[in-house]
Length: 107
Image (cartoon, rainbow, N blue to C red; front, side, top):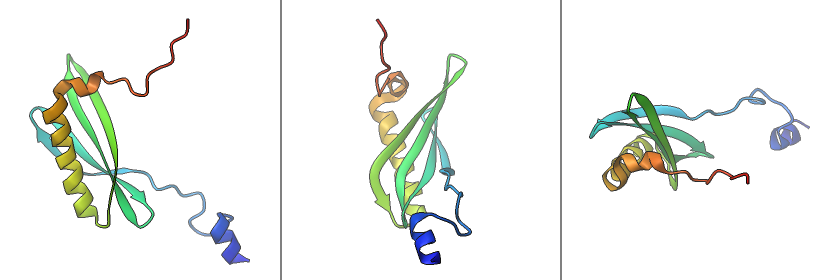
C-alpha cells in the first residue's frame, strides 16, 4: 500500500513539502543585479533567473525562465548568469517595460 501512496502523493515523509526556487548565484553587471535561481525539474535544474535594478528610486525586477535544463547546479548557475547578461545587453532597462502576459483591459 505504501507504494501506491508514494506514487499518488498519499503520504510519506515528503508529503506536503514543496521545493521552492532558491537564489544560488549573483553578480552585478552594467548596474544591474543578476540572480541565478534553481528550479528543480525532476532530477535536473531548469534555467531561471532574476534581473534587478533600482530605477528612479524604485527596485524593478524581471524574472526569466527558459526551457533549458541542466544536470548540475553549477551549470545552471553559469548559464543563468550568462542569459541574464545577454538579456541586459539586448534590452537594457527596456526589460522592465514588458507587460507579458498582457493585463486584461476592462471597458
